[in-house]
Length: 320
Image (cartoon, rainbow, N blue to C red; front, top):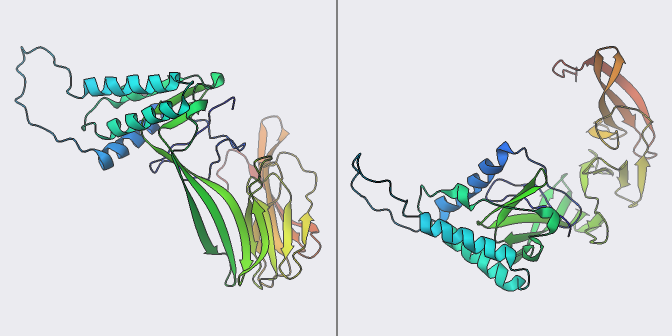
């Protein structure tokens, strides 16, 4: 891997993120770097701190400044993390050192100087590649009904790593507290136990996960690419066949593929998709637009039924 892209955990990151599968984490502005890592660290200390506090007499104004009791331990943890990053020749030992650093961090007393445990590295040099292995992996199965008789079943791999980290503006930052990501591996749409559509992760190419919108009569399912980068498809529940909804050539829309699902009509005979975007009408005239198109689920053919425009600077207010 030529780059290092990992999310935060500890309640900060809940999105589905895949490491090494072509999905890059969001770039976060520099002002968030320390804040986000320290938030994760604070949760770690709040949940895992075991050290007991002691009461000391207040220092007199003439007393020399004393080093916090946790300072030597913080310096030890920092050195341990740096040694683990440098130990590329023995990934197993390096990972064990990171695990130990996490254990020591969890025992730091409240008030410890956590900022010094944020360690910068160069992702372009692959300095963390030997540590990009989970210490544990758990398989999670989740199910939810997308209609009364159709169920979405998803399989995830929950991986735990011995550090939290991020990349920001070409710089990498890690902190010695465990990180867990949740990687989607399989999706299947089932009707009363029968699989009617499925997607399985393929490490050889980018996997296209779907969002599912079932018609009121449960005869059709709109399949929308989760990244809005591919045409919408309509699945026939009875036959298992799909048809693509081809969009017109239109400029200034917000997504790679312009159509986005809006709603099903109550009689299931059609559904509505929308296009939103901006364009320049004249000098200094920036307009936002929104179009609604009606789609026949059997053929995938679409026709425009509404278009609205308003000045781009105004808060978007559409009449539906």
